Length: 181
Image (cartoon, rainbow, N blue to C red; front, side, top):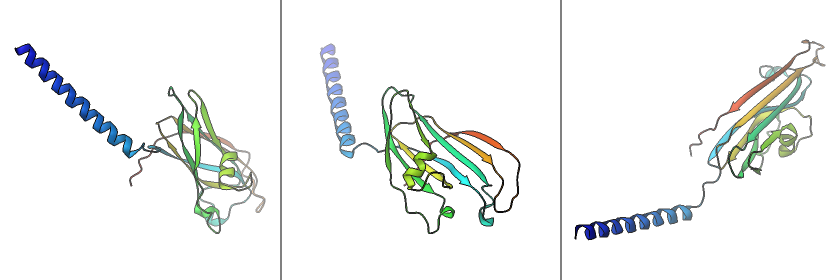
């Protein structure tokens, strides 16, 4: 009799567990997937800056600037998401319109690169234009994201000042950010 009661009790517990799981699964499915739950904000500087107005002198010097943002898919499947450019408001007059979102997809064991050519195209400015801001990336999985920044100094054509030849490279790990709504 004890065995029969134990089996009955186990069967009731299993049925309740299955029913609870089905209710939770149905509720989650009805709510829909969270789109791009992992967010990144990768700064960029792109283009040729021949001279620097006095009000912008604190963040850039004359030279060539390039950015490459790399998203490495280390998962076993394809990862989707979106990318969007936000321009530094000081870089355009009148302020640039808010850029649209673009979808992205990174195949398994591949690297997606977002470079200055992509950024210029996303904001609709001619290649080589000096722009500064951030690329906002939303992914449906957390992945390694890296920013690679290079620059080369040049003489300022407006003043003739020559800072001497200079090159730099910086590699930064872009950490996910918390979006509070």
